[in-house]
Length: 374
Ligand code: SF4
Image 1 (tube, rainbow, N blue to C red):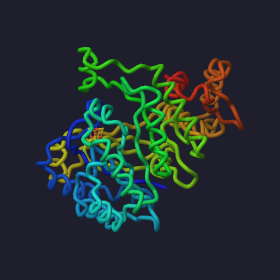
Image 2 (tube, helix red, strand yellow):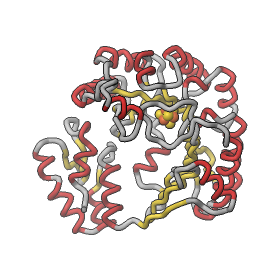
Image 3 (tube, rainbow, N blue to C red):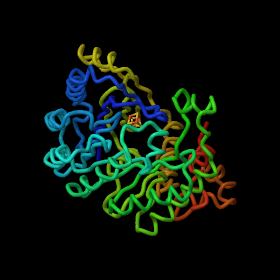
Image 4 (cartoon, rainbow, N blue to C red):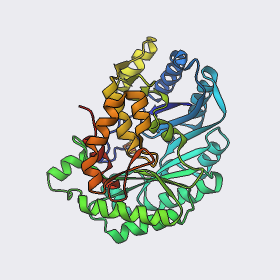
């Protein structure tokens, strides 16, 4: 199984917390779409023997492109790659782009999964984060999207300064009222060099309260598990049959090609990342030169990667797989390094697999770091 990720590096406005690659100028939209199509063509041999099972439009904000442009990109994938009969094709969309006519156009295309950036149903939260949509647009987009699409995911952010636990609970309940089968939820993080970081430094916005974030994370886990969502990755909850195939493949170390500026690629041995600059990206592709840097992963890199992603998922980290792929030195190290967290009931070994316990879930990334081979 393998996937294609296509990065659309445009947004209507910059959310204060965001450190993804995007531009708020759409001046190069046409050239960008042409360059993305050309990169798909230039890299087709990398997937000569692969069957593409997922296509994912991320960003940025893919829904700022016209339906015709998205369809042309999908067409280019089909033109140059072998695609499975029923691939998962996801488009990330923001509520302010989801008019009724737009959703109709999407439902008539090959897109079969929408990932909608709701983040919050409260106007104050949306303003604090400088989201482009309003609370009303958040609700309206879901009413319209659920009438045409069955496979929908929404993003929600917890730990927003000033948002109480009661508001967060209302956000969760509101999300559940739309009967969507998948929710991704992340803690608001103050990334360096973002507008949010500057505002926190200047005291204009209170810093993120880690204890509140942990409380709200636990509320989310309890509420969603009660409604039969499976907490299959630390930030992802899905009903049976609705787990993200794209992300699951990524967490399970499958191959993927990342198209577009700043997009990452992985083939099991090497990791590549495209240049993070729209103009330079377009110029390079126009000259038929891939603007990619490649790093060959060492055994320790691959082990660390597996620990990092595996520990965040319900599938955990298989000790048998570690022994088979990396050798006994690594599995012995893993067992020995995890002893302290296991004694604290943060990690557990079950059927030769190391997993985080309920108590350890919120700390998964830190627990993984303790198991890294350095
Ligand atoms: S819409 Fe998404 S990618 Fe664009 S600025 Fe906001 S968070 Fe970042």
